[in-house]
Amino acid sequence: MDTQTFGLAMAAVLLVATSGMSAFALGRQGNHLLAALWLLPCLSGMSYLLFGLYGILIALDISRLCDEILMVLGMPIVATAGLMAATHGYKPSKRASTVFLVAVLAAVALLELADSVFRVKQALSSAMWLAFSIYLWYFARRLAHVGEFAHAAGIVAAVLSAQAVLVARNLQGMAGIGASFSFQLFEILACTFVCAQMFLAYRALEQLNERA
Image 1 (tube, helix red, strand yellow):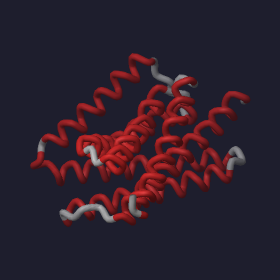
Image 2 (cartoon, rainbow, N blue to C red):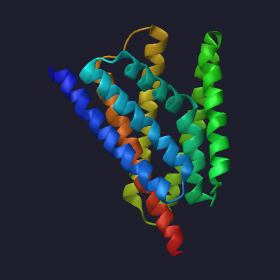
Image 3 (cartoon, rainbow, N blue to C red):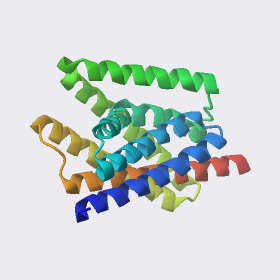
Image 4 (tube, rainbow, N blue to C red):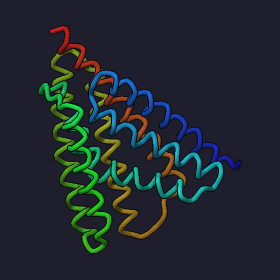
């Protein structure tokens, strides 16, 4: 195993551990939307690890599919709805959460199947991420307002990291080039950081709400 493959494998292990534990904890707390969303990077990391270690091509396809779902609509729509449990008391039932997730998956599938709407998908994804970023700024303000300044700063850093990954992915897609080692490593580590920080910030605000 060369150095680059080893580095990516270790980053993928970290992503799987972080997102997997977060998904399990969120599921036990009843936030089915965030729990399901956090399973995507967990599955993506495991699939990427299988591809890197054993060269299983279908595992790479699964990893890319999870990334597309996460980046196109999954993160901006599902994460917003999930985090609203802490900011607005929005806690849908398990059935409602399932319907919501299926609708998002169907929308992503339609965008992926229609090759002619690449520009539409790109514009829609950018608009959703802009709205998501605005909501996360509001989320950070709520954290700062209750004295959670470290988590508020972490959310701002998470916004910037996610936006950097999104811009880089769009530029590479338009140029028709493959991802370099540096970008792949940055994308995996950024996703790990976003997952961990959003989970910790959500739990901090949720616990404050429960005590209040």
